Image 1 (tube, helix red, strand yellow):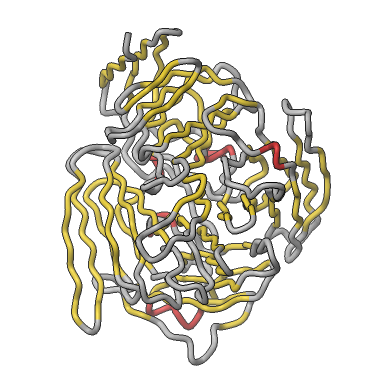
Image 2 (cartoon, one colour):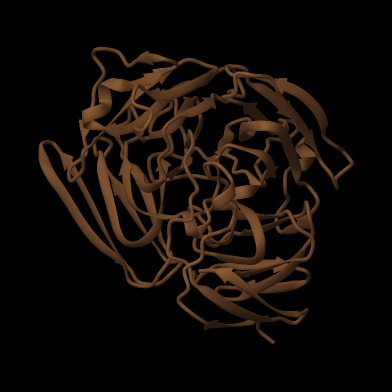
Length: 476
C-alpha cells in the first residue's frame, strides 16, 4: 500500500511562537546546536575529518561543550573557552559522516553559556563545502529541500531530531528518477516516507534523482541539511564538489532578496528558486551593461523550483508574491588555472537581514582559501559599513540594485575571525562569505535572522504508512 497523506485546514489563525515573547533576537546565534555531516566523496586512503568552527561576539569568556550524546564509537567530547576574536576548531572522526540512506545516532551537540556562532565544514580533498549552523531555538516543523542535478553521485538531505518520538513525514518531489530505499522499501517520486525519530538521531535520504523540493514536516522542530554528495554545477568544466547548507524553515522564508554575483568570474552563476505555495510569481530585476534587466516567471506548485543562469555582472533584486527560498550556485571551474569550484549558498531574504555579525573563515585542505565578503547595504548608509571596526577602502566599488535603495559589492578578507557592523546600529546588512581554491570552494551566509515572518495557519495532517499512522499539527 502506498503512503497517503491528507491535509485538513482548521482555521486561518495566525500563530506567533511563545518563545518570541520571552527571548532575544531569533537568529543564527545561540546556546544550543545539533549538527551533522552529510555524505561526501573521499579518495581511496584519504579521508579528512569534518570540522566545526566556533566563535562568539561576546567580550567575556564563553564556555563551550561539544559531545556526541548517543554515538560512542567513535565519540566527541571536548570543552573549551572562546571569546570575541577567537575561533576554536573541533575535528570529528570521518565516521560521523552520514552514509547513503540511513537512520543513525551521528549527531553532535554543542552547548554554551553565552551565544556562539557555529559553522560546519565538510571537507575532503577536492570536495568541500560549509554551512552556517542554526541553533535549536529557531528550528521549524516544515522545510523544502535543495540539491543540484545532474547529481553525478547523489542528491542528499538529512533531518536532525532533538526530541524523542518526533514524527517526521517526507514527501519526495515530483521528479523522474527519484528512488530512495529505506527500511527495505523502495520509494519513488511523490511517495511519502514516515519515520519516528528519537533525540540526537539523524535521517539521511539519498537519491541519484533530483531531491529538490522534498517536503519535510514534523510534529517537533527539526534541523535539515541539504545538498549533494559531490557534483558538477553547470557546463563550464568537469570538476566536482560537495554541496551543503543548513536550511531555513519555511516560516522564515521571505519575498525580497538581493544578489551579488560570485566575484572575479565571467561564466555566470546558477540560481534555484523554490516555492512554498502554488502559483508563486517571481520578478528578477537588475542592470546589465547599462541596460535594465527584467524577468518574470511563475512557480506553479509548492515545492517546485525554477532554475536560472545569470551573468557574472548582474546585481539583482528578486521579488515574489509568496515566500520563496533562493539558492546561488558557483559553477565548476572553467579552466585548470581558475581557483574555484561548485558551491551552494543560501541567499538570505532582505526581511531577515541583521545589524551585526561575527564569522570566521574555514581552512582549505591544502592550505588557505582566498576569502571574500559579499555584502548588501542601504546606499545612503554605505559609508558607515564597518569590517572589523574599520571603514571599507576609499576605492571600494558599489553596485546599485535597481528597484531598491540597496547597493552590493565584495571585499577580499584575511583568514580568521571577522565582524561586520555599522556606525548606525539600526542599519541592516546582508552578507555572504565565499572562499576559493584549486578545485575547491565554499560559500554560506555570514548570518541572518530566523524570525517567523510568514502568516502561519493551523493544519492537521494524517499520515498512514505500512509501518504506522499518526496525526499532528504543523506550521504551514
